[in-house]
Length: 217
View 1 (cartoon, rainbow, N blue to C red):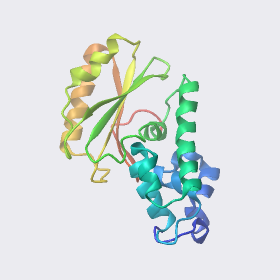
View 2: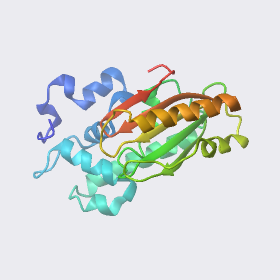
View 3: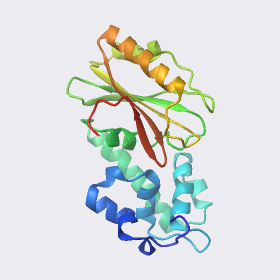
View 4: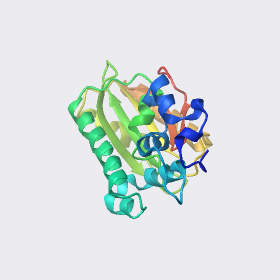
């Protein structure tokens, strides 16, 4: 699939645009969303390989994107879409989280990080997003964070529940023993404080998996 330079060379069921129109943008990975915007690759690289490179460079700004040889037009399209997403999120202050797909979409800024990072989503009693915060950046295989650091944030907000998401730089969607232990510790700490841990997701550029998910997916 990655060797193709045009999306139209793929079977209909695998084309990101068709998947988006049929099932919604939430089911697409970050790379697939970028591929929809690009439509085609370059003479040297297929569209999916190029989309993967762009996904890793998005947080670094336009200079490195320009160095990919996309040209000003495609680079402008990518940057405009990123900015549009940011502005729409700012305008829509009330975001109600009801699925793991939403959590995955909102975790776009850590999926391609080279070190493990953990995001905490703070929700009120109506599952409305009050705050999203990157809580830690750890080593390649480990995030150093105590449960009390997560719950120290609830003093400022009417938090009823939280959702966690962290990336695996290896690309694996399997939960490690440490992931499970950490999740249980946070869950227990939350029960003492009256704050529910609704879910803990592992996110990568290829998708997401769940550790004890309770919300609908």
